[in-house]
Length: 442
Image 1 (spheres, rainbow, N blue to C red):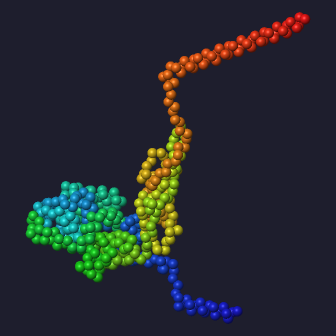
Image 2 (cartoon, one colour; image 1 turned 60 degrees about the vertical axis):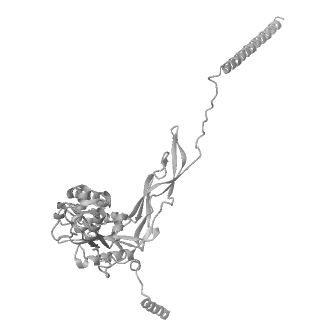
């Protein structure tokens, strides 16, 4: 028996050498990358879920990734065909030697051309021109930039200029910039501009030369750097100042996975390495989990009406999610691991309509909130009337005099008959009493 046991142990050890074992974590997810930059973040572009972060909430100087916010405000407040006329302040208030495309005082280009100049070539004087066109002055535009950032949830961000040249009071965080990037990513005009690896601004009122623009983000420009090019990177912005060091925003779409990476205060050698590490980590370690869509009925609630101070059920309301929603989860997380918290009233009041938002659903993995979605009334099915309907009977009782006469005659006859019956009864009683009295005398 002991020899057999030793033999089985030996066979098991031999098999374990041939077929190595793997831990669950190693087989389903890639280890978190080591990032050299001082601050970095990776988020799901759809749900804004943070997938990786390093000092993501630490305030840093943004440099030219500021221009993502500049572009967003310009897109929201100007038309692509609007004309920009460049002022002396727009051109000469920037530092000598900083990024520009050689605009002249009084020169005119369209907003569309200016946005290409800002997003592809990081032209500082063009950012100033957009600011003046949108808000009247660079200072007013910077205030609007900060206010709009806070509306998007970027509460630790402050702007004092539209180009990103250094100012001690201009700062952001990796998390805030990821939020801003995720918002502009949903703008089709922005993504259209990002599709242009190269762009030309033809002759203007001040020059007969054509300006040739080229995308500076190395992961997006195959002609500039074929080895670094990634076809899944579809948007982004570079930045650099001596104090901010290198900064980079990158937007990628790989199948149904959409990612945003922000790198702050990095050195040149590690800037794109860190970005690629985070993109690969997101693609290899996460998968898309589709949540409830608007066609799915999540719950049915009664619709109540009030009559005579009491509640009556008038129908039923089908409740569904407002938007189709998906979220990135680690590959080792299964659908059964996701829990939901539904916040709904007990019933719907009569008068509510299809499409009304009446609650919210929250998706959780443990205590981590993965996503939220509004709940609305998808459909209403009304029930038959829950109480007897009283139909008023319309007669001429108050207008026809003949009915009054008939009622009077009927009552008179009934009264006479009652008197007659009473008289007959009295006569019979007297007659009976008289007979009894006569018998008694005899």
